[in-house]
Amino acid sequence: MASSAAAPNRLVRDLFAKSWAGVAILLVFYALIMLGFTLLSPYFLTFGNIASIGANMAFIGLMAAAGTPLIIAGGLDLSVAAVAGMAGVVVALLSARGINIWIASLAALVVGGAIGCGNGLLVTRAGLNAFIATLGTMSIITGCSLVLTGGLSQPLNATDFSYIGSGTVLGVPFPLLLMVVVFVLFWWVMARTPFGRRIYAVGGNPDASRLLGIPVERVQLTLYIVSGVAGALGGIVLASMLGAAAPDAAGQNLLTVVAAIILGGTSLFGGRGSVWGTLLAVLILGTLNNGLTLLNVSSFWQEVTRGSVLLLAVGLDQVRVRFQTR
Image (cartoon, rainbow, N blue to C red; front, side):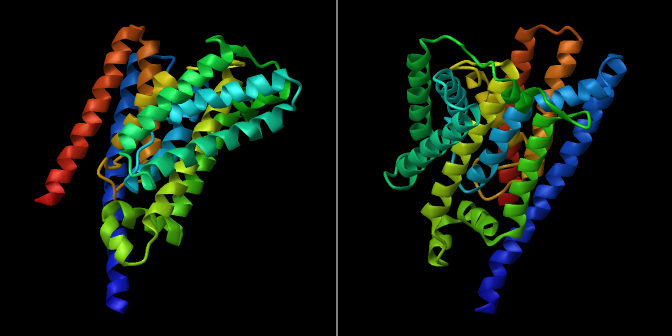
């Protein structure tokens, strides 16, 4: 029994070792990008600009942080950006009816968790493909947000609420601090708790995990709920930054979320990944957008860059899988 218990632990240690190797490569890549933009623009390497990069990418980072363990466990949530839009709509509509803004925010988190639970049940109980199930719910959620708002942005005029998106702590943007805290929390859960080891086991080999007594479906359902809550939290941060809730405000950022997770070293096949890799990838993508904007590169070409990065991320994932198989 001791040897059989040690085998999964060795597997997890090996997976973490490979993840940290990927993080080191990303760190070098990020340093090169920083150096390049510093040489090309005198406005890039300033405290205000670097802080702005982190703050502007915070809501994407929150969604990517929760999406990382979900994909590691063999799941996928394409509805997370739609949930973010819905969360902002819920906050705006409830506050417009006189409900306290913080109670409205809590209600938005509950709605996000409920949507995540629905996604999880469709995948784990109904047996639907995760891609198809969450693609369908993405369309449903976006449609409901448009119906509730008539397709129009909803203003948010609460002064206290704006602190979430634009406040600072000792000069550091609050959204950036919130994102870092969330990433640290996910790292601790995945690296220091039995549930974290189950995430890797479920994604690496779900059939073997069942034989070992791991509740595969329960683990995945929990992660779908967490993804929904994180999507709602990202939507609250975005609505606070904009001072308004738009039903499709976060929809265009779905590819960025997925690209960050995959570029960060998480395998689409499950079983391997690191939240720190995802965090670095989020910062890389944000830095690219910021640097290209400072260099007056057309937004059209920036869109081409984002798509190219996504293809590169998926291609690197395929290469890693084939190399490890050999």
